[in-house]
Image (cartoon, rainbow, N blue to C red):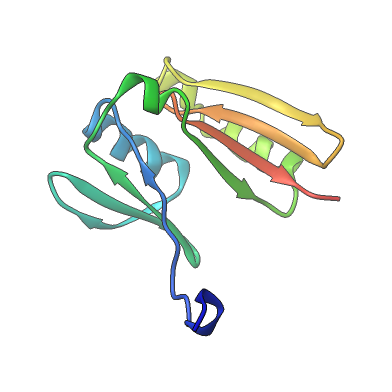
Length: 123
């Protein structure tokens, strides 16, 4: 048998949080649905995709952690991000407007913990 022989039902990443409660609020404001919560772990979902938010922080780990979310139209997604006014409620986050790369187009969001999110569209 090989891995290809198994039906894979899900693949999730464990995203760290410096301030667990603040990160929970942030991801809800971003538009994810919290589908599970405990003191140490929450699940955030959008459509068929989800990730674990963990009540865990290590500066080196968090500041080198990246997530990638492919969207239909990154320019429209950027307008959505701007409409949320996230920087007002979360002044520690960083946003970068869409930029064309040799592989596609992306915008960037750095969450309250320092996790780098790439939102991108492939040509």
